[in-house]
Image 1 (cartoon, rainbow, N blue to C red):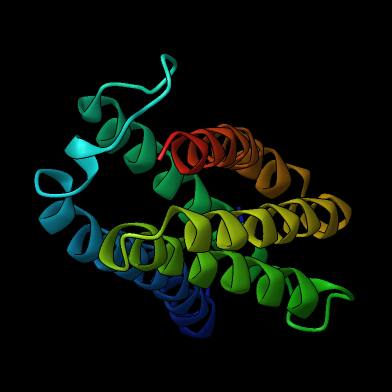
Image 2: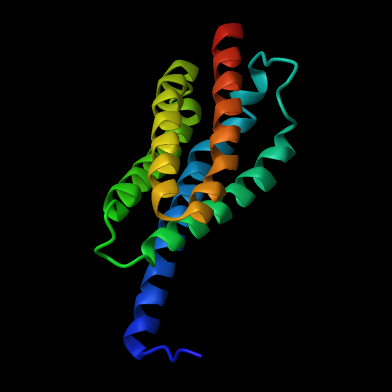
Length: 165
């Protein structure tokens, strides 16, 4: 059995922090934009028949954020000089920033069209992250597939809400 050095432990903990903190911050920022606008604005919008109940979003996003943090952690613990590692991480953090920004564009700005523009770009970054992660760590890439599926569904939902309103 391999002994971990104190440097290895510090690196592992640092990677864990760089995976969890940004994802948790994204979740909190999204909630700050979303919750104040659910009752006043979102509830009054016309929605398509396939719109999930509001209670569905919290467990789905909690699961997705856990998977996202795990994927980021897996990429972060790769050796620093792994070719493509920095690209994968940059793509990951850009899609994460777009994720947080979507809530502000859609809910806080009350603009389905701004949210739609964001989410289309966001899907591109998610897919690019998955493609780059696949070359480095297939488990990390697989953890992001549910995110791609859900955000694609959210894009269709976002479009429908824009179209109906």
